[in-house]
Image (tube, rainbow over all chains, first blue to last red; front, side, top):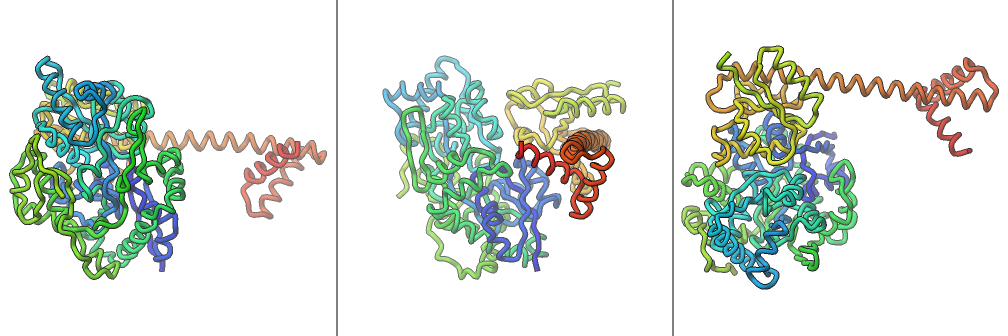
Length: 389
Length: 194
């Protein structure tokens, strides 16, 4: 018997798993029909999911947590039984600000520490001159993008709450806002960073993978009652997603995947642009290209099986970003959003050996899921931050 | 009236925004403004400082409004989305119509509900008009293709207009296809044989 499921998505490269699950026939093989519905905003995704217009959705991992806790909107507990990707975002600076960093250093900034420290000097100089603060564009108030920028600023000894401003800018408007100058930096996924580089509006300074190894970016989110009431369909969906994740991660399939995602009904961009992000090889400014094998990851490193410790980390980052004190009952409610039990039941997984470090932060305080307070206490600007192994 | 809420419409579609504005004015809301989605939206909203914001769901700018849930240094008054858990049906209806509303703290829910209902109605009217227009355009285009195909048949087979039409209709019925599909096939074949 074939059942059918309605899945919302935002046209981004990290929607690869739901799209491949449908297009490669992985869902069909499981006896499941996936109907994909393209959306224009994360707020629409959230509202259509919680009001039952979608059965499931591609969602920002922090948004699944805030929706479940009732932060920023009415409280509707969600379930996340599958992680869709890690990394894939960049920090890009507007051309003028990038030149200011080069001036301070006498050369192009190399690596996140050097660029953040150079930014610190530019900010101090601007403060002394009475110039306006730098504004960073991020894709949503609760996003891995905002978290990445804060970590990077901390690395340079910059206070994200007092030294700079943040503003939500939808990805399609990011490049224009960088050129107009009302944002001077941004953190966004591909193809928008490459667009900024191509048009001369900005230069990429940091890959998200340079900040953390496997922080959760997008996830599969459902209403709790959908998971409870229709577990058979959800299990089919998860099995299809698992096959799709394996297929998407395989470099030999990247050319096919790029063509699939590039189609008008999905991302509607040139296949080459998608392929660059999949292969992790990007022009970062007009003269330089860089590549990273973990630029965007769909499988491995505990990405697909949702680890409740990751949800606790997200909660700690969200509370810290809102300057709110931690609340252990909220942390527990957040942890309950990530559902390894559903993943295991669907895939027949017998508890993978858990990695010691579920986030893989490359700088800053060590993350201990059992001691969020120490972690949050360590989230401060410091120019001598320790490097994690 | 002194206590009329100021209403801001954010819509990329000029015609639809005009229809909604008219509707609200007719309902006695004089204080209505409209923004299309360009530039720094948050700054423009801060300047206007509305009590109610109506936004179309096709706009990626909805995510910009989400920032106002937090204490933004730019916006004077806290803003929340008009979501009443007890009223999921009307929210669902609004989402299906393609509209969402945000309100500042302290505004009476029933008054907002009235405004939102008004907007949902107008959104529906607009999509019906758009649909009707689309249907009319399609019908006109179909008729043009059928006329051309008829002309091609009349010339190629020396048929009268009536005979050409009957032949096409019979072919369509025999093949269980729409008349316009048969007409398109004739026009295409002719352009290839030219």
